[in-house]
Amino acid sequence: MRFLTTTSLTATIAMTSIAMADGHAALPLKELPGIEDRDHWVPGEVNADGALEAMQAVVGAEAVPFTGTQDGPIQIALIYPSSDTSDFWARNYLAMTKRLDQLGIDYETTEFASRQIEHSLQSTYANQVVLDKDIYDYVVFGPSELAIQADNISKLAAEEELTTYVWAFHTPLKDLDPQPDAWFDFSSAAGALTMCDYMLGRLGNDVVMAMNRGIPGITDNQRSGDFKACVEEKGNWTTVYEHYGEYQREGGFAGTSLILQSYPEATIIHNANTAMAMGSVEAQVSVGKEKEIFSTGWGGTGLELDAIRRGELDATPMRMGDDVGAATAEAIKADLEGRADELPFVFLGRITVAHDQMSAEEIDALEQEAFRFSGVGALNR
Image (cartoon, rainbow, N blue to C red; front, side, top):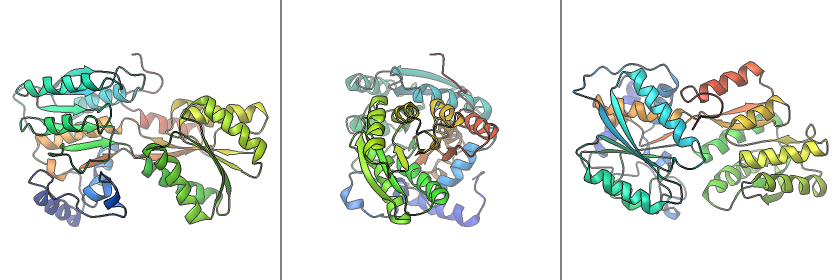
């Protein structure tokens, strides 16, 4: 494997590839706490030791061109809710195709667009791709909702002619049969722990915190719940109030206004997404408290980075947004070179912390890295 550097890592992945040769039947590779209570596996249960880190390093490095030959362009079908307002899909499409260009892989794409709520349309598209399986080599599927599209994922994965990749989820459902070839996403849980380590290192122990949480569910459980559990356990932090702002700017404003009035002992306000972070900052600025509160965001969007530059937001876990698309291109290269068994089953994009102690040049460099393929600033869609 071209990007592994140690004999032990290569041996570990080689043994894993043997165990998984029958279509991932040997999953999980290991068991982590809570496995019996989940209907899905977490990345640490299905990735060989070191495989994810090795792939992340490849994705963050300069492209190493494909060494093989092609009879013609590979055919890639993309089924995803790219008609919605989120630019995740468009950015990672650009990242995938531009990385393929860098790798020197000839390709053609066919996009099957939908909105997030159009579950049945995605089923129609999946059936169409199965019927046309002789046309396509790869299918990238971004489920409208994982459980609803589970049968379609397995239907695509069952076709030997197709290599199936899933975008925007990193929780392989245990009862998927067969499993797709790989999953690509960012982990809110990993981001929460990265943020926890940063906050403890910067602010220390025995801190009083309040939170603007999103909507009860897996995403907020990770972004907010895992962060809270980490700082409370490792740093003896105290959480005095939790406001559910439903991921809306207004919710962040209302929650922060209440916190400032009723919980003045809270010196930290944790926000679970960009919209609530912007509302929180607005509430603080309106009463001149933005310098007294340490405020966090989530995701490292342009709005958050601008707020950090203005001195209104203090820190945010920042996704290297183009990693998912770039990793997909690298997975295609590995597959074409006969090295697919060396890849992580679940790829997670890198998350780092952007913060107000960085220089303007450092923040700019981080933003350029995150959107190195799709471009900084709003997309023209």
